[in-house]
Image (tube, rainbow, N blue to C red; front, side, top):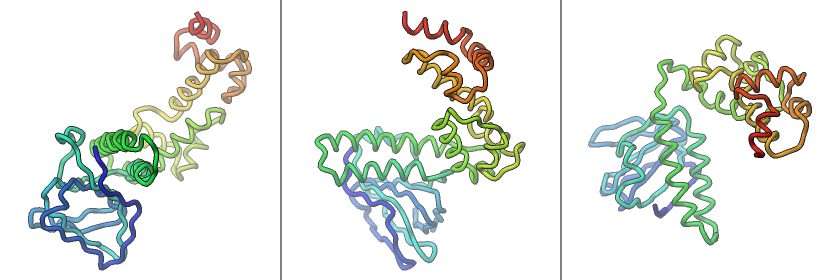
Length: 257
């Protein structure tokens, strides 16, 4: 895919208005950070904050601010054979639970776009593909409990924190406090969002890091258990065997044979 133009965190006043009756000659991906009013097929359509659209080539691009200010990220691009965007609806406002992941990828594309890196075109092509894969995932996120939309970012950030800090002794109380939820409500929302309980996620994270340490270092099982927040070696060994079917020592030997 070829990036023709890109803008990140563009801010405009309430008078902002785009009117391209014949389109822009290429595809246009817009990530709305604030609300907007679009004209699609002669009808006014509202695009709320945390939504996006991909304008097809030749589709009129007519949209304006819906409030006192307007903020968006956008990319004008060409895609050969439409292959990389075939799973996404064109000329349709897509509601997303969050645009943080999308905005981060677009920022990475922007940094490559303005760089002089030798492989920047290859990098942008890969990042554009990732952008549409992630957009497709977010569009497909349709929880039965619509309240999950409001907690999506907080829960995603919390899960990231868990996996960045496997050494922490996470408890339900500590985790639920991070997102200002009661312990029971937090556990329900977390499992509905990620398909696993928070404590199971914590254990899985710790054991993933422990496996790496067992295969890549000569640290003792006791020391590795302590590194990842276990108060005693026996507790670590029980959880490890329950997860893998073998002891930490047997796992280490299997990786080195």
